[in-house]
Image (cartoon, rainbow, N blue to C red; front, side, top):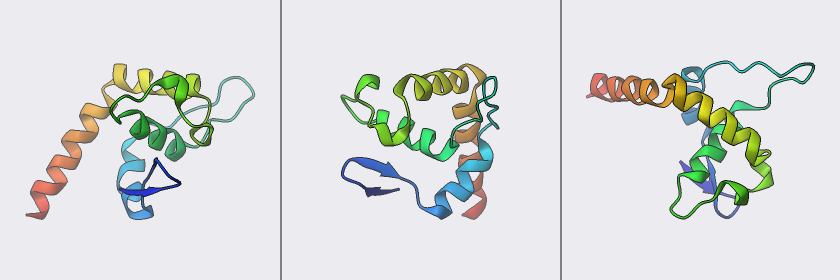
Length: 95
């Protein structure tokens, strides 16, 4: 991952091409369309920094409550565990 915009964690297009398809499709709520998954994922990666707090999530990642809700849904659905397994298999395959 490359850092951009100060403390922002930004994925390269190649990294996103690998990770994006591993994430579940999001549907909008009511009449609102779903927000950009890449931006939300990068916000979640920003939160992985030591000392990060949800309420301090920069606005460029979206509303902190929205990013948090999606993060909780993904944790409960096992999205991150499945992603790590698939990425580990890809690394093992490339050796």
